[in-house]
Amino acid sequence: MLVGLGKKGLCCIFCKYTVHERCVQRAPASCISTYVKSKKTSHTLTHHWTEGNCTGKCSKCKKPIKSYNGITGLHCRWCHMTLHNHCASQVKPECTLGEHRDHILPPTCICPIVLERQRSVSAGHKKNLSRTDSNLVGDNNQGAVSLPETPEGSAMSFQITSLPGTHP
Image (cartoon, rainbow, N blue to C red; front, side):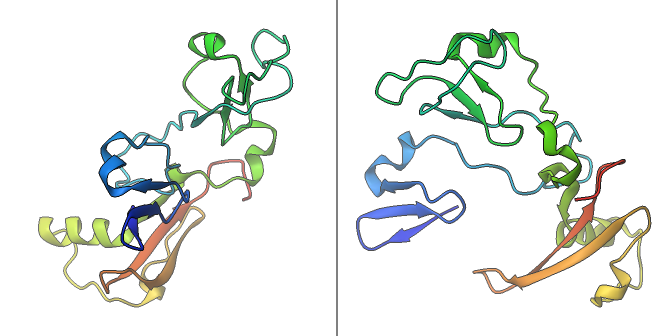
């Protein structure tokens, strides 16, 4: 989500990537996902690679990653795996979240309730919905979190379901 930055640029409110308005079409889609749009979305988390500025050894071939002006290597923001660019094709796209898996709440576990509520109301599944948070808390380690109002003026609530065997 890019917001205005003075008169000449845009800045992403999530990753702080800044770009001129005239360059926005060439901006990389490098923002990390913070939630899924639907519960029906796949619960498989994929690596989120950041390019360049990598040091240390490659997680695949175990050889050192040599940085040439900071443009070499890939780093997963979730599991912190570091790879040579040419080793990335040899790694499964699914991310295991690394050694701190038990303490990470991935975006696949967070879903906006507003969207789910709109779908269920339009489908006629729920007749008497109330906007109280007590009605939003469910079973199976699920809960609801209400956040401040969005820039559009509507409040946003999220349903959070932790992964089995974890305690984020």
